[in-house]
Image (cartoon, rainbow, N blue to C red; front, top):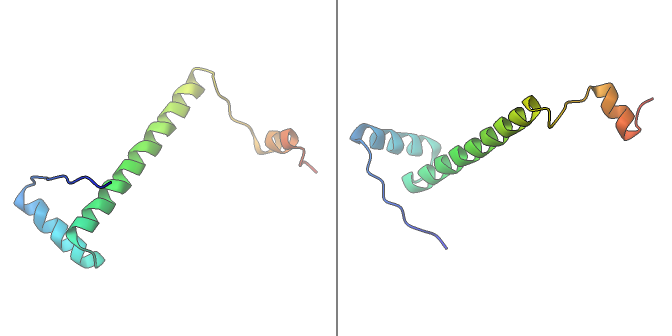
Length: 77
């Protein structure tokens, strides 16, 4: 089920939304929804990457060289 959200934004920002939406051939609402979705995805992946880096720093994770990976998977020549 969709939820309605109302935003207040500066006039200049609104003009940019209208301009960029028109350039993309999209309605402003659809354009904003796509931008929000992209930002949410980016935030998720950045958070996951940070978690992986922190686990690596704590020694809870490790990286493998290509040769190690091939040996581990049994695909080395």
